[in-house]
Image 1 (cartoon, rainbow, N blue to C red):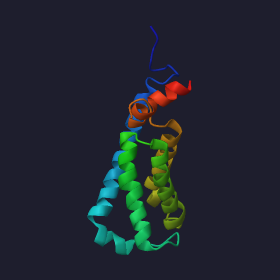
Image 2 (tube, one colour):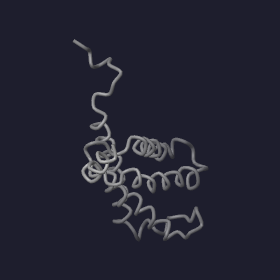
Image 3 (spheres, rainbow, N blue to C red):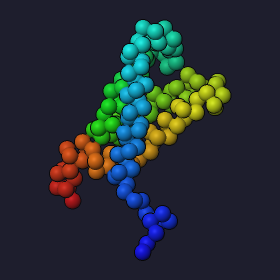
Image 4 (spheres, helix red, strand yellow):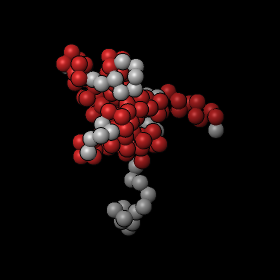
Length: 141
C-alpha cells in the first residue's frame, strides 16, 4: 500500500486550486467590503501614490479587492481577475508601504504570493471557467 503522506504527487490539484481561490477571494471580498462599508471614513486616509488621484485610486482598490475577489472566488476569468488584485498589492507593498518595516507589510507580501500562485495554477476543475470553457478546450484538442 502506497503511503500517500510521502507521495510526491498532489492529492488533488483541482481541490487545492479551489481552496486557494476560496481563501484568497474570500479575504479580498472581506477587505473590499470593509472599504465599501467605511467609504467616507477611509477615503480621506487614501494617498495618491500612483498619480491618478486619491478617490480614483481608492475606487480602483475597491474594484480589485471586492469585485475581482468575487470573480476569483467563483473561478470566473480567474487569471484575468487576479491581475488587478496583484497590481494593487504590488502598489501597496512597493509604493504605499515602501518605507514601512516588513512586519507592517507582511500581509500584503502574502497576498502578492497567493495571487501569483493563483495566476500560475489557474482556476482548476471546480470553477465557472471550467464550465464555460470546457467545450472550447475539448474542441481545440
